[in-house]
Length: 328
Image 1 (cartoon, rainbow, N blue to C red):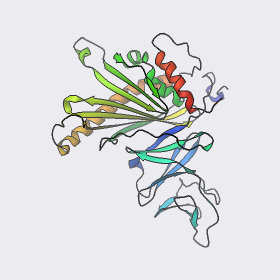
Image 2 (spheres, helix red, strand yellow):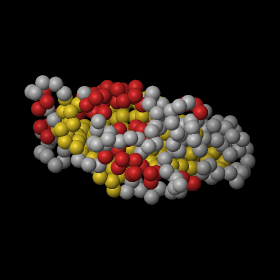
Image 3 (cartoon, one colour):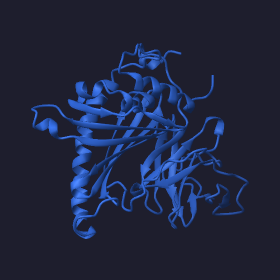
Image 4 (tube, rainbow, N blue to C red):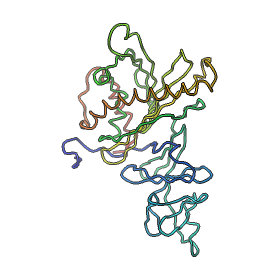
């Protein structure tokens, strides 16, 4: 099927299944209501006063008001802005201002909160989650800096970048010193790279180990150890399909103690250092990704790419990605 809106930009891929990070936890304070675009529809996120997050379809079943346009949270209930019908966390209408509530119910999305992110599940034909987003176990490994933009490309094209090693020296001017073959484990795909800057021989001695872990097409974590500081940098990249050939890209970062090495200094002293490192790494990553965005915004999807020697990771990725689409 041709994407009419995109002209000659190739076939249009369907929305994949999986977990997608629609917001940072800190964006949804108790009592807050947020609207996020997800797979061509609005999703309303809200947090009850006791701190529990929920995600619902946006329209009130009474007369169709949008909860994201003035809806409020009262205690544990989401209240419609049009007639103040109140809905409990299980979706049932439990109160109205002037009489017994009707037999009405909100449609909920499955939501998870982990490592400072709010994830919403998308399953084909309403299927429930059958895998989870991996946990980043060290305490304090939650985002302290973040950046987001919209990209005119399908989510698959963004996550495919992690296995496209040819573009790294060309687009990012970085040398790939070592690359382990991607390893697929069900909905997870893991690889390890050793990267370093191009340039004079002295500069090329600087090499950094990066461990990439994909969980579906929506979640990517990059782990970067700093042995001399006894610390680890985490970069999370969230890819959310918001419409046909449109993806919301969120990059977030954190720096924590490496529990496998002896920490240098106290946590109180290191906290501002960690935040500064996380901010610096975030903006380094953003500058690199902006080079990708310029290409993603103009490229088309090739369903049968003519792969060359050295592109084996892309072939493996494409095979792995099939599990997130409807069969057939």
